[in-house]
Image (cartoon, rainbow, N blue to C red; front, side, top):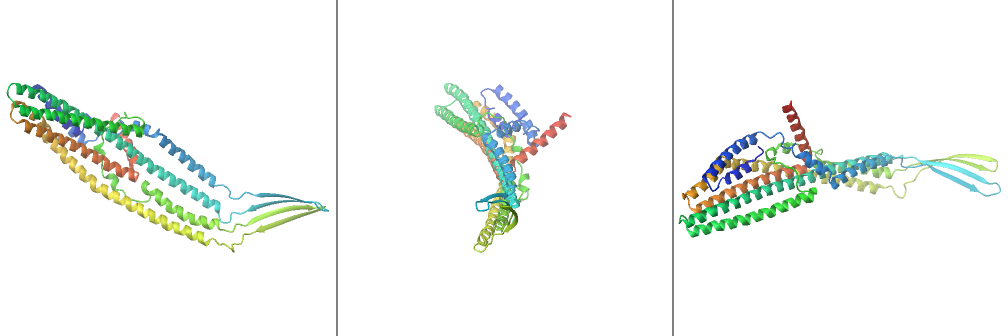
Length: 438
């Protein structure tokens, strides 16, 4: 059974039915659900990701913005090929002089790339391509995290909606019992009014949950183009494993900034190459009357009025700027990692504490409260207060699940590790499933 602890609590709260036979049946189903929940809490379901993630990724990869990223990759590759071409083409000159003896001339000249402008341009194009690919990788992880968060919010909103719907149904059923008890004199009119107010409060909560679910569906629709996508909870897969990696330039979140430093250093080489005095060699042939002439020429630019030292100094300053920008990005990522490493264990511990209390006492209390109230062992006000406490417990667990997902996805998306982690999970689970089949 693919039920979480949240689902078990919902079953427990639904045990507050109107007849003793229904209560007994609900308790039996609840015990079975709890047993399987305890198993699933310690052993991760093999199909946790493989059952739904491939379909979500297929839809994600078909999005126009993701397709545009593929086109940008191809454009970057073409830029490298364009940069790896000769800088100077040969020049052909033709001449004619009309004189007593007509003169015809033909000359060919070629400027030599003495400063290796071609090599520098190719290296810059390669770095620009790597920067673009790194940016796309990080952007893709952030987009994926945003869309998974939308699916999680949709799932959590549907849980809350289902819970509030069932609470509303239970409250109406208990109101009918309260009316019957009032008619026979077993309950006062004041207590009946309390039950009516409780039904009205549940109706309002139900309406708000419906509105929140509509908003969550709309968010998924905007991000995916459709709102009915497969999804299963994977709260048990949220671990600190990804936070223990070393924050290095190879991390997608820092790779682009580090390559900007390399780019700035190459820009210094480019400034030197652009300011280099590239010589030109020319060959000429001339015919004057009956006389043929041949010549060789060499021209070298003289850097007298401008030696381009200021342009080189500007490029050197760009290296300092790029290095400081990288260090700032690294510091920001380290702070995010520390925040994630501090928050996730605390949220996980609170979630475990909550789940243990729910499994041990929450469901039994939910099934016995209704019996005690119907038998008159507890007052209506105490019964309603207990119901509100259990409802608050369920919603608190739902909020803890949401906080766990948000903390984990925020770090994995910001650091650029999300897609790689999900692919590794799919690969591991695929291998496990194959092993079980064999």
